[in-house]
Amino acid sequence: MFFYTMLLLTESVKTLLGRHTKILVKYMVKLEVKSDKTENRVLVFTPVRVYLLTAKVPTRIDCHFHYLDIQSIESRKPTHFTITTNDKSYSFSTIGDAGSFTSNADVILTDLSSAIKQIFPTVPLRYIIRKIDVNPIERTSIFSDELRPSDPRNVGPCGGFSMQYACMCDLHAVQYREEVAWDIDTIYLSHDARVLNLRDFDHLEQKDLMAIVAALEYNTFFRGLKASHTRLSTETLERVLQVLRRSLWLEELHLESLGLKSDFIHKLAVAVISNSAPALRSIDLSHNVIEDKGATHLAGPIAKMSKGFSKLALAHCGLTAKGVNQLAHSLSLNQNISNSLTYLDLSGNILKDDVNNLYNFLAQPNVIEHLDISRTDTTLESVFGALLRGCATHLLHLNVSHNNFGTKKGKEIPPSFKQFFTSSLSLKHLNIASC
Image (tube, rainbow, N blue to C red; front, side):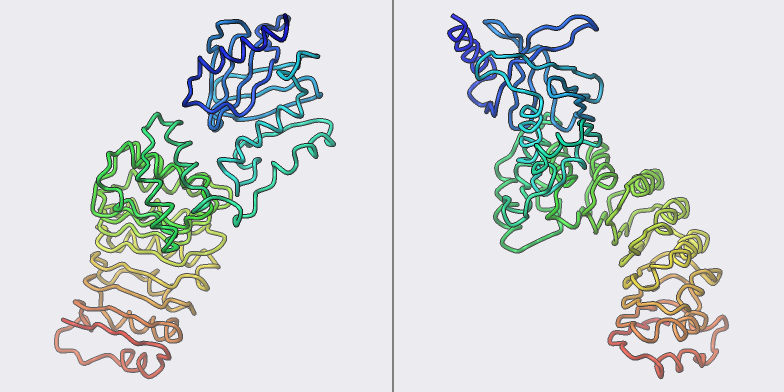
């Protein structure tokens, strides 16, 4: 009679969840509903969600939550475990001999971690679930394989992006689009393209873009995100910020001409600072009017980047000397910048001559290869004096067009200009048009 009841319950679970929901594994457990009361539940793991169902026929859904809602897992003994989500804790105890429906906490937690690892195979479980407290310590060895990331060579295309995209579609209640997965798995993979360009998906709605961006949060294949000459919804921009908060792999961020303002730059700066180990090394915010206030916000994380910074592009951002001096000061404060920054573009901002912090930074030995300060209303006499001292070794591309050589019209070309070219070892491209 017991096994017949279990069979009916199994069929009821399948019927309730539907044929489109794959059941990875299910267990009969006791759920603590009050401090002194428990009730039987069926604990079901699917590809992206955990379901708690009533242990009777016909069964019904008591509750469900996404794997990414899980904040912590705790287990003090093999017969008990607690899963805490964003808004609630679920305490379980295992049931004795009740057929194939039951097991101890170690097996259940191993299956849970295995299900999560199928989505994020190259990311350590402890990074996704921030608190895993299993005692005694010897028990962690039971599912230690699940705590370690898989070899990237043994996972799906582009670090398993398609599965992560499906996971985020479910989390944000967005329709999964096969064409997105196909483009990533086929085109991006064949070109080994490591920067995800949202222009490739600009035919989709904003909610679709949000899920695509969200999939980068735990993806180890892509190294950059690019969006340009469009408008992104508030929700999509929030996902960009979330990726910056969590990703340990995103190195490049290109957000050109998106209509961003200083308030977003403040949020961006906070997101980067809150990341325990940011990989970000390249930022392009060109053609967004972030003004001096935005530059000041950006100066904070730049000064603290432990791995330095390779590219900073802020062309036509409405900056003045005030904001650029703040940025240049942060570049000087970070001792790793002098050996890492190779690309600096401040063109199209009205700087004039009061940018001593910028001159001081450029005058220090550095590895800048590309420098663009065209159309900044800057006097080139001071610029070349700084370049002579700090940029003669590595500079390949220099654009100083549409600026003046001296403060007085008719003044002859300054000696620093000639001395720089005498000392320059690498320069290949020079633009001094309309100077």
